[in-house]
Amino acid sequence: MGVLAAIHQAADIPNYGQGWGAYGKRYGASAADGISAIMLGGAILPSLLHQDPRYFYQGTGTNKSRTLHALSSPFVCRGDNGRLQPNYSTIGGDLASAALSNAYYPASDRGARQTFETVIINTAERMFTALAQEFIVGRFTSKGKPKN
Image (cartoon, rainbow, N blue to C red; front, side, top):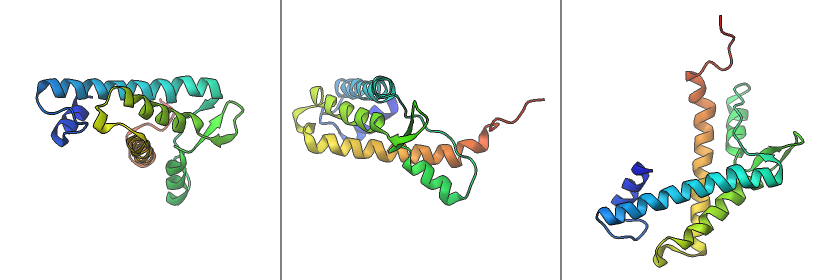
């Protein structure tokens, strides 16, 4: 959160001004954004909707199938019944979290446009993270190999 707040401080977004007080507001906003996204999209909605929105490593198949698997993960998840379904938990959690940020962002950084821009950015971040998990992280883990 501190790094993200520093990046936002350098870019002067949201419009809190500059200085330590503004950095503190950005740090608090980053914390609130992260906690609300995790709680809403990773806990509350999955529980209510009976979904598992986590990313599951594929690890096998062609690079194309693995890429499509990773890129679709923000939009498709498994339900408690084991079937694929729209990932309402993640999408709804991101939307609710971005809408909630209107309560503590400055007036110049509020509104529907900013809310939807945030959802699009969060979705792109999830896609990038899934690609990294699929193609990079797997190289550094045991991939479930039996231990001797």
